[in-house]
Image 1 (tube, helix red, strand yellow):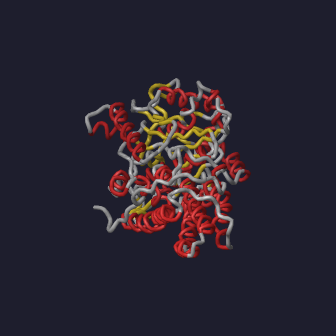
Image 2 (cartoon, helix red, strand yellow):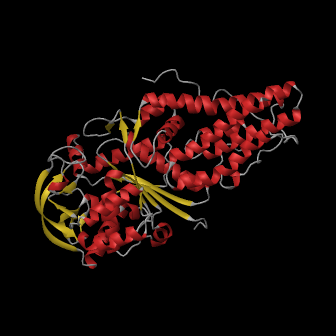
Image 3 (cartoon, helix red, strand yellow):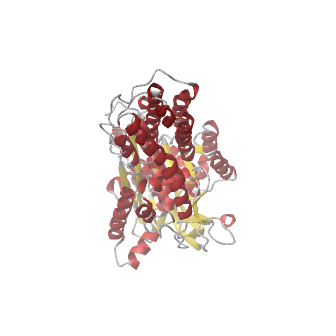
Length: 515
């Protein structure tokens, strides 16, 4: 077992009733960025994503296609995995809720809840939304419709098994109050606490009359309710309850990354389930905002979706990943459009970073025989600006990443990019060359090269294909390696005499949005 510090992070698992859209990509890419950063800082990372397969919607979709639910889910799992691979998602485990290990974990969690006296049989009567497979009381509805999908729920009346969720309200409140980091951002924490203070009702955890799902322990006429079953993926992916060595290494999760619409399940139901099973709670649940398309929430029900693979095909993987996270505050709601994609691509990637690389390498070829120069002894005040800014970057960047402030982290890197571009104008290397000031010219060129090396390292988690392209042009003998922090945040790591290898433009300009 690795001696490195474990770090366990997850996305919400995706419903298998349709292919992923840009909203799913937003969560996957952001979590992938955090996972890559944690690996770069020396952690033993377990990054889990997967597919949520025991859904009435899945059963309905499979029937429409003339397939069994198992056949349909097998196909959709492949679709998800192919999509995540195309988006550069470096997950360590793709968990499917139809896997035997997940069935075993779900049944064990029901048994533990039963042993704790938290399971009883009763009758459920109320509103049920088939699209989100969630129960609602009258006050939850918006104009008589599901608050998430905007469709009228059905009135459901059936005998179910219930979990004593109400019993855990005091313990949940105490935990949230004593662990303010448990629910982030702060706005989600307040929402959850208000829900708990408003009173919790016991939760129906079984459905009758269907075979697609996990059989309820000791009663095969019921299956485990999909939301109770789905949440358990976070521990079944670690081998619970059979591989307790792996489970105990990585659990509790360091962070569950989820959409803000499912915080109730993850911040109330899931921790109550864990309390009942006498298992530790996750350290943090982060409920990110939605991505809107032209002011409208993405909705499979409404058909308002955008295929992320279309964006990758048109603009490239790294530009798409960059713009999606740079243009939006992960804590709040954001927007995405092709117009924004092109604008950011041109301004940030082609102009700011691409031009910095191209101009610097052109001058190194011209003034330094195409090699990394030794630092000159002559320096002026302006030459200290870049090293000083670079020294401040690592702690600020690390803090932004810890807070899942991805746009803020990228902004810090681009501040260095912009400062380096400004430095070119201030130092005017062409004038130094003309005046024969080779000693100071070497200092200026080295400063610019070091800045580019640092930029390449810091963007590695966001733009994994771009980093080796930059490092290769800087002459790095192993450009495809993982850049490690904090060691490589140090200034002055370039090897003197290393030959650069300038190629074409990193990001050729786009003139208009692709169609």
